[in-house]
Length: 226
Image 1 (cartoon, rainbow, N blue to C red):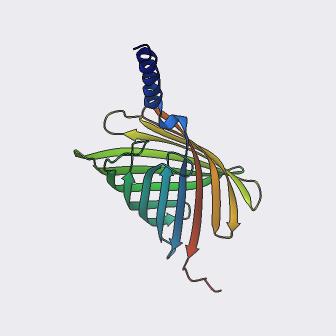
Image 2 (image 1 turned 90 degrees about the horizontal axis):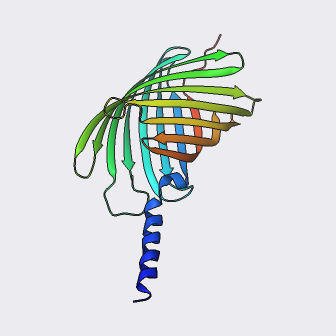
Image 3 (image 1 turned 180 degrees about the vertical axis):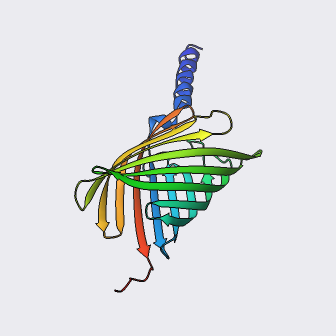
């Protein structure tokens, strides 16, 4: 009986510590791969893949796959429609619950311009999200605006900064924000590697993530001859 109270206290403390284990205590990761292929002056496609983990190399969180169709109606302006599929594990620890599935449609307008030494892009996006939870299905809509700044240090290195608030049309309107700062490398003429830090605020959580991404551009347009 004399060991009962200390044992109970230890069990209570360990249970409390386990309950406090959450994603904010860990440095997670986002790994991305984006390809852009230009067919004509006006049309291109962008396959895109993203893998997120609660920890740098383990503890699966999310897979994102999308295919974008782009219409370049001006040199610096693009309209996009896309379809995306997501597989989402929203539980930090291992569990046997089915993951949430999402099918997403999106419409987007993007514009690029320069301001002094900065390359700037504005991206406006509408999303229709078809979510399949374990006990119900939902349709959600939201709006996103992303401001991207790029500064070329030299022909090889550049700095990048993006700020993206997301507005939900359902409850908790301002429920998410993404702030990214990083460095990029032009590893080949049409390929870039970027890595940096992402501060991801989502609902009541403030998450710290490393983000590493590769982007590749290809072009099948015929070279004009004089």
